Image (cartoon, rainbow, N blue to C red; front, side):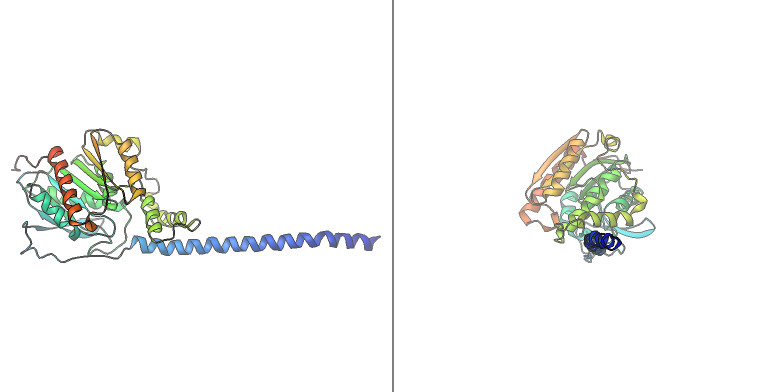
Length: 318
């Protein structure tokens, strides 16, 4: 009887051992798949936050528009920008370039605004142009925008309390974030903006062709959040309390048909934004890569908005 009982128990345990081995194998595969995904995502985020830099030398002596070099400090790092003078005492338009771009790619846009007597200022964000470091996709870049405004406001040939901001993706987020806490910003143009930096990380993963891999985008966002953990409690820009600070500030939201993801986010920001506000849709985004014809149309749209909402006149500073 004892022998029969032991045989029966052995028979019952054998399928249990098979299931346990199968479950262990599955668990191991899942564990290593998750580990590999996190490792790839971490490397991918490193590549995304440290883009290939583009920089072009500008000869201030021969460049039209008589630009001045302006040095300033942002987040403990030295920065330099170019100030293009317009009407004395007029508002200043600060152009905030996009991800992977630089101030040198915006010079035709600078000329279009300066031709209408605006003061114009351009500079490079961290990890762009000649600057080292990594991008935070707008968290620290908003501080750089504020530092640029502070530096320009010390000049005796500008209105220190009247600035317009233009930004594209990264620059649009930084401009909007700064405008929500800076009353000196009197007009905003936001091209292909996003609500929180993690959304731009997701776009970067998709541009690398890895958006279809399970959990890759989410793992990349997790890695990015860890890098920027000091901003973990930061609310989205569309938060109603934040958006309410822009009541009375003219805003133009630009959506590009060839960038549907950011276009949809920009549309949502427009809908949640207080008046006054305008909306524009264009076929092709990214000013630096536009055809000459598209660039001219874009420049005319931008200049027309600022001429209407922030005319380049003012009292000359004493």
